[in-house]
Length: 77
Image (cartoon, rainbow, N blue to C red; front, side):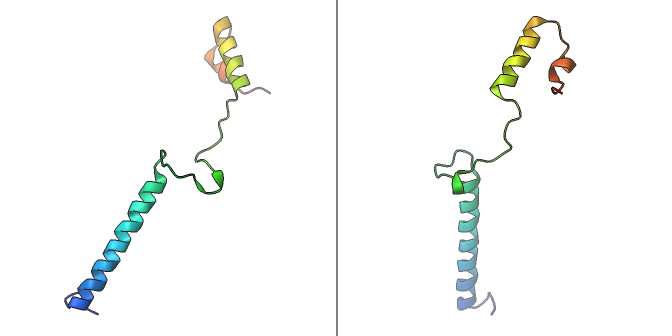
């Protein structure tokens, strides 16, 4: 089928519209402030490594001014 005939132009235009619509749906779902919930209640990204307890500990170490940044950042053994 050629895109120079009336029927070919109709089919080509229909596929172009469907592709544009699908791309818009993908962009809409990918937005972080999308109003619809994500499937299975999942959120994107990794879980944070720093728990509130670790943040408090690091803040106390920093406030004590007895530790270097390397010591504060070093993971606990």
